[in-house]
Image (cartoon, rainbow over all chains, first blue to last red; front, side, top):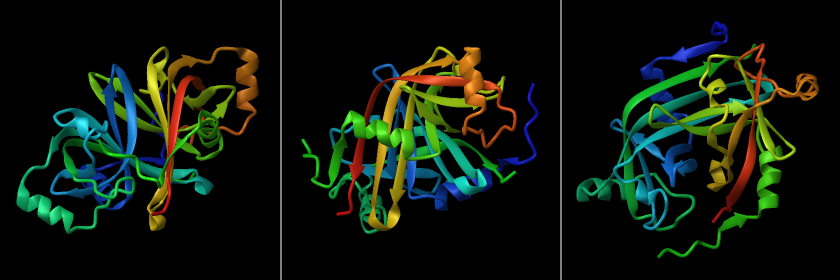
Length: 136
Length: 136
């Protein structure tokens, strides 16, 4: 058994959520398609216990409605060999509430890929962990 | 059907391999554990058609020997809403060749997490795609 080194810090749920909410513009959605794992980067925001992202119909992301996925965010500073990462799990659901959609459309979240990304989904976070690797 | 916008560029296999090889210090391994998708960041290098990473016994990464996984790398520049990402698929195998291990140990790849990461694995890349999102 390998002891966890002192420069690796397990983050609390609160710290992990804080980093998920404000730590990055781009996260990674992990899921299974045709029997094999897939990772896709997405622009997102975190609000009210959920990761919100937008896409267009016909994409792999759009087809995730109802699926259990992973969502990972990380940042690193190679010069210090340091960084943090957060891993969340939850189920994807399409956002259909008109008032919420209206509010989201007026908000800051853009898809860098698609100009009119009118398919809004969210991952309701059920569990989250995180860790930080400090400079040795 | 949504047409792919002009500012999204599909990368060739050669371009994707170039970015995988030199574009980042940290990539993301995607796999399935206990029936659900997982994404873990790892330090890696790319050589001779394979993503090489190192870990210690007893970790989730160490247990991947023989599994088909995804490996994703991306970089982004939020100010331009631009970035690129590369997604590879392949099978993990433990590196056991003594001469190759000796060469790897003398090489530049370090695990930021573990000081003595003596379990070396590689993902033999079977397919790779990539795309670049340019500033609009």
